[in-house]
Length: 144
Image (cartoon, rainbow, N blue to C red; front, top):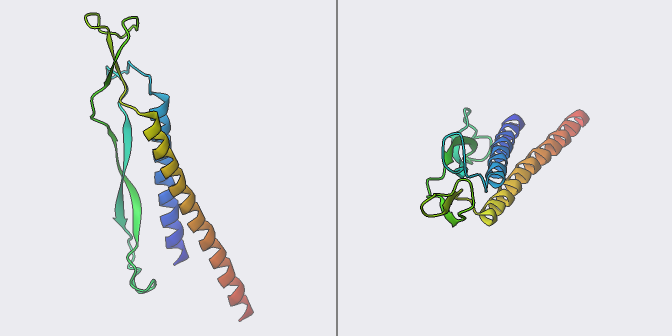
């Protein structure tokens, strides 16, 4: 039973680590106006999905429904680029002087980073508490 809880916590930690890395990439590219694909960097977002656990766990956990987390996709934000007037910029439109900038809001990204970090810490705490419970049960079993 404890192994399933560890698996769930590990999957949640892995998914949130990917989310934090994606957010860090968004922040790092907030001023990138030229990419290999052409145009400005496009914000990316990680999409999570609930995944069924392979074993039927309900009888062991009082009919609780457990789900695992998985990364369903990493999607590019389809919002249009921000237009910034900067005629001296090398990527400025020669006619208008506007530059297409990434559609990234640093405040939104920082809030998302805090959220992902909190979720990661919560999953790590679940693993830690589960380990402590397992060790306590092992000590009790040795006494019997």
